[in-house]
Picture 1 (cartoon, helix red, strand yellow):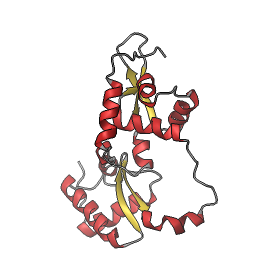
Picture 2 (cartoon, rainbow, N blue to C red):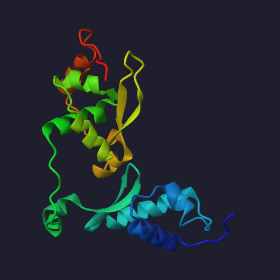
Picture 3 (spheres, rainbow, N blue to C red):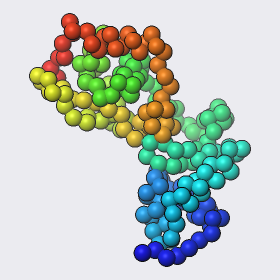
Picture 4 (tube, helix red, strand yellow):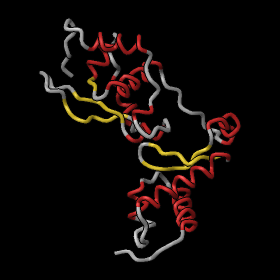
Amino acid sequence: MSTRRISDEQLIELLEAAIFVAPKPLTKKQLKETVLSDINVSSKRVNEALEAISAHYQTRGIRLVHVGSGYRFQACSSLSPWLSKLFQERAPKYSRALMETLSLIAYRQPITRGEIEQVRGVTVASNIMKTLQERGWVKVIGHKEVPGRPALYATTNEFLDYFSLSGLDKLPPLPEQQQSQIDKLLHDPSVREPSE
């Protein structure tokens, strides 16, 4: 049982430093199991410390953000036009087809490749699914219980991290017209799920 105690200020400093030096986002559980493992601190105090850190950085050039796989610091998006000059590599350009496929998976998951094709009206190229899986944005989470048992795709925490989302509920809402059109296409009985 951990017995060491620290002040609120020390807790804030420790959490801030841990999140700052970590190579990837950290969850509250990871913080408690690593840097706080020998310190007697409640979950309430951890939450309060994270809130204090977040409040401190609200007027700074970086922010503490909660993404799919935990907490991390990142630069304010309003500064990206200037900060992008630090990086020689250009961000990869993704095709419209890839972005449409990713959007359908994000908004309608779990979804099969055949269902994506129903909505888009065209075949999904194998390289699109391969790229999404290689990026770690999409994974197979099972198989649909229909003939051919097509793979069911869903987004990952890496997807949430890349787009700075804490959860799928933070996706911008789809316009009502698009939502109803997708529903109509997905429930059209004249279209059958192809075998993959």
